[in-house]
Length: 146
Image (cartoon, rainbow, N blue to C red; front, side, top):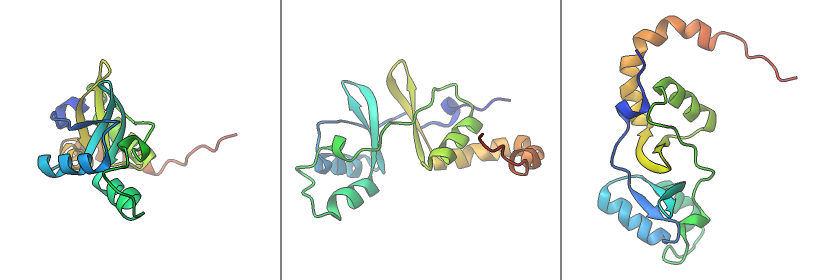
């Protein structure tokens, strides 16, 4: 059984144009009840910002949220997956990059987003398939780069 990103992603993706400011992004987050927004340039996903990004990179630095464009503090390059990416690969990607949200992109457009919460839901289904592989996955020594 292959469980893919499309099976667990949140289909409603909140987006903001890269030219918008942090204040507009924060208001959009508050209005829609989300903690992250995909930043787009002519509809194409180019970055992501979180409520924490606004606090740490704008507010805590004493910058005026109405004057700081989101493209100045968005996380990039954007790490994405396709709808058919297996959830185990999504989990590995999130771990490798130390991220909690991954936009799902099809034909250059953000069609969903997988969060760490979604990953937790998927793990309930994946657990029976992963448990027998734990020694293989975690106890096998990593090969050193030469």
